[in-house]
Length: 223
Image 1 (cartoon, rainbow, N blue to C red):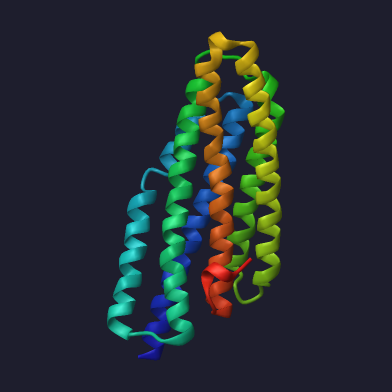
Image 2 (cartoon, rainbow, N blue to C red):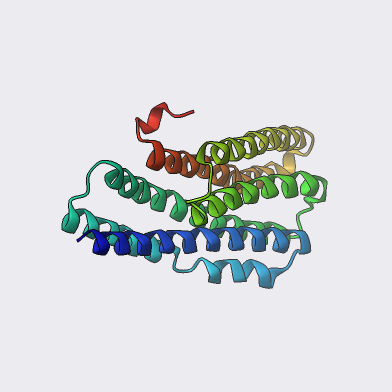
């Protein structure tokens, strides 16, 4: 029974790891597409993430089956609860990246000039990618990973991401004041960039869940 349980949870872990890697690849690809204003790469992001919701549902169903078949307790139960919550966050990251790529392609394709914001947007994007990389690498090498250190690294990236977003938000608000006729476009861009900010927030949640799986306690009390 134990061997079957371990085999099943290893399979679930591998599927989550694969999903995390795809999120990282898609986010990196969307940054390349932004930098190069490459419509083909933006469309490729959509292809990479086309089945993210379905794959998340499949993983959730596998986790629920393990609950039903093996009635796990203690540490095993923590891992499964953490996995179940992680899957939802990962899927949301994927959906956010899809929306970001679609909307940014539209912004760039419209001819609207966002050159002024490009350096800041690239940095915002890199911090969201770095946060994803940290949790992906830690999850993939869970036996060697220091989950507290990993959490701190992700939080640092999220803090940088928040600061960058605040700077961009102020710059956009200034543009809205000085270029009122373009205010609708600037508001749309701000909404698009918020997808990157939310991605970083979700990475922190995932890193926190990884700590919870290892340490136990109350998820909401971790900081």
